[in-house]
Figure (cartoon, one colour):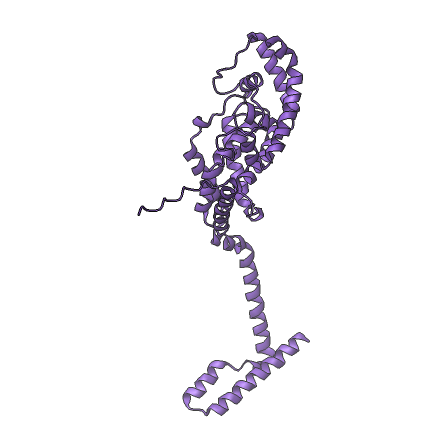
Length: 201
Length: 133
């Protein structure tokens, strides 16, 4: 008689993963509230990349983004008592980053106007350099008219390649809400850049 | 840890990427410099900043030290003044306890010592009432 087949491993559902994440975060938070800073270190390690992604898209400068992330984790530690343990820690820290980043952005002139990294464009475009520069300037102006959330969403989606679900997870928004913000942001941007895109076409 | 709710699949209602807009945006905001960040160093900095802001238990003593010392000094002076005043006005209220102990040790009956002790307590209570009035 042959041995019974071992059951196929069950892939945990997103709801199960979320629950496990919430329980793990809650345990770290409880320990941190009791003064165990190593537990908070674990939360920092788990969420600093996610916080940095949003921070960088808000302030647009690597060092500023690092400082912002540090500042936000310190604030999170100070206000840890107000954290709702029934929710994951990630969106909470992201919300702090968004709020503080928006304040920072408003109060401080942007340190660098040029992006830090070399940009390699993979999309075909017939725009000459002068037109591209003009389009970038127009885009910069219009981006400034978007609200913080829409600006971050359209950048995370169209530049960083995150899905609406991944963005929603970071910002604690439903994917449908993310898609709506994305649609609105793109509508404003495309309208403003229509002339350049027509030239491109 | 990152949740990948889509598990590598693009949901059917996911908007398509816009390469033209994406390229212009990338030129404007730059790529995400994830590889340029020293994550260990950043985590250490955050941890160190948090530990530096933690309040050690002795800091409460240090914080109260300036206020507590003059208060203790004032309380001590007041107590000494009251003691001297009572010594002058009600010397019988301050029959010293060491005298009672000596009496018991010297062989006085415990009943006598108890009577003396109760007399001392009564005198002290009367004195305290006088002070309050």
